[in-house]
Image (cartoon, rainbow, N blue to C red):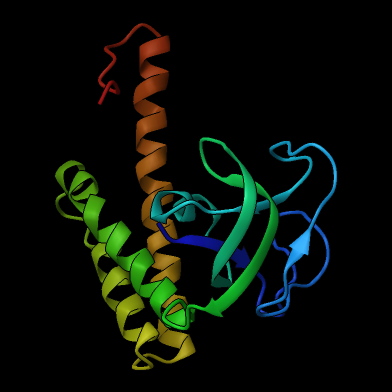
Length: 172
């Protein structure tokens, strides 16, 4: 099983904690291991990584005691052994596009004539590949935020009608 440590680019902790990690250098803590209080927090597989994604992901090793939580593990002794170079700004953007595209059908079913989210996903992919300038990216991003605001306003108006004695069609 692979285990990971998410850090800032300078190898400092990005989700609490202190100190800077050095490649292949063991770090150790004293005292009782307690999630979110004492110990080194690591990601136990890809499911944990989804919650803790950050600037840099390192493959890690631990030795000795481990306490498992729902979204992380805590260990007494750990080290980072290599940076996963495949995780970078480009792949982070492409991953975000994949995630947005995966649920895009929900928006498009409700708003079939609004293609702004689909267009921004396309532009974001091109931006990740260096094919879009900042001006085009800013325009697409603004359009996507406007689409999200418009959709939320429509939902809120429907919900308000419910509280004013109308039908509630916001249950989906």
